[in-house]
Amino acid sequence: MPVILPRELEPLWLEEEMQESAALSSLLAPYPSEGMEAYEVSTLVNSALNDGPELIAPVEQGRLP
Image (tube, rainbow, N blue to C red):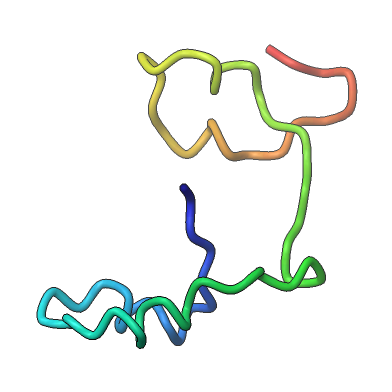
């Protein structure tokens, strides 16, 4: 399951020494939709062979490679 965290909580989530499941569980809350952005990306994302920043670049409407 993907986890979306505010930037300021990322260090706590990634801390290898953190063993307090209650503290980590408290981070598993819905991320506010106003903090998200949705846009169309290239169909290159459909292959695991592709990798690179171009995969998350927005494409113009109707201009997919």
